[in-house]
Image (cartoon, rainbow, N blue to C red):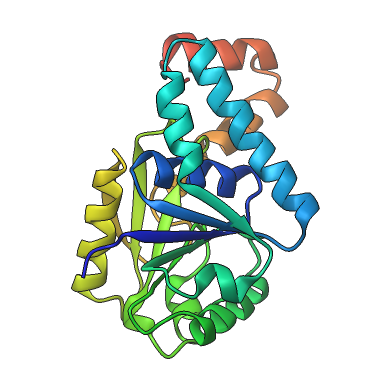
Length: 226
């Protein structure tokens, strides 16, 4: 069975962007958060981003309207996850918070549902271990801003099945994303490549080898960083 209905739990900076990615891919998308205030803020971020894309000529208004028509919101976790094929959590980057949520999602979601985490550093294996479906738990690490960045890290826990991987890979490709498949380890791959460069930049600054502005220019103009 392929993925058709998706839910995103936590619609802050990352969750709202992930919601755009899912709906833009043509998937029915339910956004779930704790309060109407958070829902309003997250949905406002979505409409603001899409309006900006339309004004810049990067998206037609008809496409924006189609995306918004595919998005629903709720504060009821049971209602939001009751009939989805994939759920992606994008809550605080704390293991105890994510494990508690994985337990709840496991108890609510149908047996078919894949449980995904947008974690950038934490163990998918550990999250999956608190569920009855570790073979259907996988890391789906979108990068900021998710709606514009083409690459996604697909993280295999120790028990993640090949079937789960393939379904999520197909889903992401339909959403227009490129994927890299990595094994579960602290920081995965992208952050392990990126953070040493950040640390080195601070070391250069702390050693008074160059100003912050010139270090930034070296990265942007010399190394072609965005």
